[in-house]
Structures are given as structure tokens and as C-alpha cells.
Length: 218
Image (cartoon, rainbow, N blue to C red; front, side, top):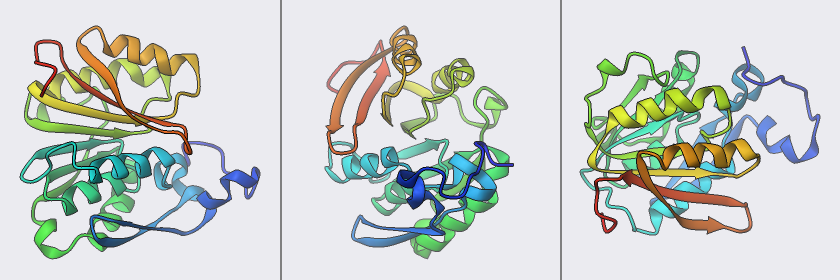
């Protein structure tokens, strides 16, 4: 079932989401992603936050080679795919209904030498976290995952579980509602948070977060 109601061409600005594919070029690779708004809704289209996150990764301000990374709420998988192409060992996660779709996009866009260090895995925030190593990742990535208030507490629980004192969290999002800033306030109770990039054209913010025990220069 779609996560949001599907209405064919209801809003002209959303027409790009009804396309069956979306093309990009990142990390010197052409990437072609299948989209399926009708079946999977928001989980199966490429949102601007994912594009801006990939642009930020290409700026080289975050070390990716041989970095153990995990993407939360991956959707089409664009961010995780780009991180893998740039040398990271990536676990690309989403909820069970989106996994088959996500895995197909990952397989279609990663060369064999990158697929061996990439895992597509189910992760519903706050659930079954023991399947993931505590404090086991160097980098946590999330693009446009801050929008449902009911998910804020389990998302924070998930971040707490995945992050060590040296983990960097990158979140790309559009600030649409007061609840979005409320999440950032909740995050700041246990993480230091700073805005590291803003794409004015797309109105997307990129935030960097790290546990409060960390040094700011990590």
C-alpha cells in the first residue's frame, strides 16, 4: 500500500514523481533509478533532499572510502548507492514493503566490485535494533526522513543505538513544519547539531550531528 494517497497528476509540481525512472550522474557514474509512486508512495521516488545529500557527499567534506556507513529510510537508494560508489561500505535500509524495490535499484546501479561491500537490509526504526551492531557505524545518512512526528522517538532511539562517540550523522531535509524543528530540538538533547550546507534553489538543509561527548572537529 502506498504510504501516501496516490492521485494521478493531482499537483503539477509532483509530476516528476510519476515518472517510472529518474536519472542522475554522481561519483562519475550514470545512475538510473526506478520509481513507483503508485505502489509504494513516498518510499519509491527521489526527493530533493537525497539529491542535495549526494551533492554534499561529492564536495568531499566527509570521508567515505572504507567508511562503515548506514542509510536510514533509503527509499530508492540514491544516497546509499552514491556513498558506495565513493568507496563506503554501506548498509542501505528501509521498511520491509520497500526492500525488494530498493534492492533492485541498488543491484542495477552498482558495479560488481561495489556490490560486495553493500547490504540491503530491513530496518524499522526502534525495532529489532539488536540485529545491528551497537555503535557499529562511522557514518549515518538520512535524506528527508524527518516528517512524521510519530517516528521521531524511534528514530532517535535508532540513532542512539547505531552511533559511537566518533560517528557522524548527516541529515538532509526541507524544514516544512514546526514539527521538523521540534525534531532537531529533540536531537540536540543527546547530539550536537550544526547546519553544514544549504541549497537555496531546492530549500534543503544538511545537518551534521555527533554525540555530545565528541569534539566538534570530528
